[in-house]
Image (cartoon, rainbow, N blue to C red; front, side, top):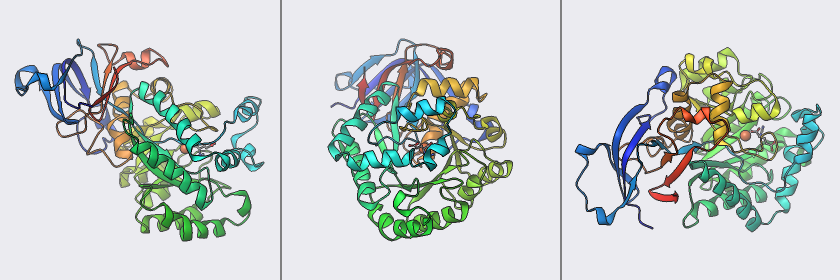
Length: 413
Ligand code: NIG
Ligand code: FE
């Protein structure tokens, strides 16, 4: 498929840079009216006013007239549990009736229930199901997604999940870029109940070496009664020594010190952070660890939202992601993420755009490749239905994305 494009009459709205934007910088967006974007072989060759555009042979290019509509960088969903067997609608109903996420997990449901279903699910079926979700993400403008393992909790099934992610990312005509994360430390499997250290030993001995080369990141559910701080430290230090970049599920249910630990170990991101301490925020600002906030999860669990304003006002880089998974948050809705971040987390729409593009890319350590519309970056570009980017949160929970260009290919016209 041709990856040479010219987009004319674009109202380009984009953060600029190859690194995460922190604090006040998050609200600075470059805006160019009547812009022209030239894409050659999937890479942005030019973005600026019409007068400065390079002369190219238009016959070699697909020409788009954006008719003054807003043109944004593609969205980066930097935290999802995209691969899973089965569904858990009963648990959702129990929670509506007052049951808690952790008590369901402690009774052997929750993550363990998806582990059982994922072990039984053949690779082909897992792949097809994940592709169905990818197609929906792409419709909403996602051009990069992170996908975690973590529903195997044994070497064979964890590797099966990473192989599914690899197969999806290598699929011809795949609609988005996929970054893979090993999450063997998602829960202590039932076979190791009361033997957390032994399970950590197993992960270090067998799973990390097997996951190497198949996953870029290693993640952990650092939580009371799951992996405590010192257990998390031991495992994540081993993952770091083995060459993985680090992510944390931190301070999601209780204040435990996951944010501090993530900062100590130089993690690329710490995610959730609903119950982060002030010291955790301070340490993350110092270490440059991206705070990936997941408002859909707080919404679905009826928990307080993460303190986005405190993070930003303390000079942290904030990213937003969906956390799509079959348990705590069965939604991958980018439009609802945008609305919740603006309405309940008091983020400005400019901050939200940065959080879902450049800072999302930074949370995956690929901000030099994508996350903004600038020369040299991959052409991950969205054209909205509207000529005003402020429509994004205002049209609550609705999809404003008209056209999606991913890696220079038109995947939604
Ligand atoms: O990000 N808290 C840990 N992991 C997921 C939920 C996984 C599940 O419930 O299946 C989360 O919330
Ligand atoms: Fe998660």
